[in-house]
Image (cartoon, rainbow, N blue to C red; front, side):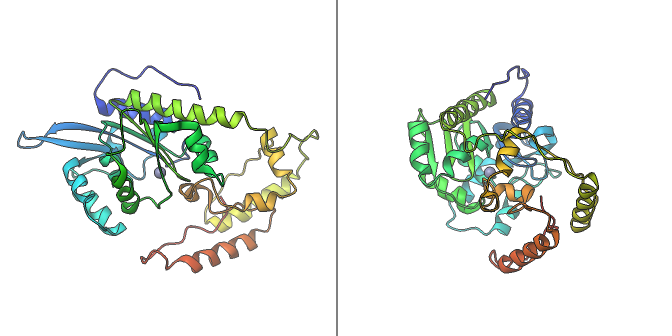
Length: 329
Ligand SMILES: [Zn+2]
């Protein structure tokens, strides 16, 4: 992965905005709304007393377009105190995170704010990079990650983001974050890198992802590109599909068609339904992609399956859940 430079010489929050936008501009690193970043600074409070503050991405903001008000300023000592708890429900954690804000109009902090707080380094960047997930999602993913990165990363088994993940990381960090460690690999989830400033954390992020990409480039392509050009599709059929998807989504949708070589190689696989139905690269993508794509054009069947899937699992978190629209994508 190529590295971009030229960060503005200004305050840490401005540099964080700049670095976050660089990450957000790469769909290989984060999908819209995914990933999060932070920086730790010391600010005077209303009384003039210095307070250690974590500026962490607020939910609802996208890294590609984030601005300074998109980061929630939180009291670092309060966040670290929460990490000493044995247990904390999702609802209580969000309540406590909001309560740790030093600005009344701050956005709701990312659910991964506690993980940012426990890392001792000033700057922390987190993405769900495709290349990294392509390593961790192998049957022997942990061994591959060990081969590729050696002792440069700490590896943490998959845990759903929130208090339990932060607590799990707190058990090994910062004790195991020695000077050679530049990142944390969360299996089936993503990458954290950190540094003395955003520039260093960004450089380390790109270095580790480039390592993953080199490893993948050495493997044979899954399928050769088909020789035949993409077949023509009746525009009226596409228009009908767009109308049906819009009706299921509850709003007008835009339909685009892609037939580049990678897409053609993928959709021409005889086992397409099987490989496309195994879920996204990481659960974090579900919000953008749904659990599985629609293969073919049986939209009614897709909507039925999605409702059934939601009803089957709606009780699992012990809190009231609201179903997303049942349209694919
Ligand atoms: Zn994440």
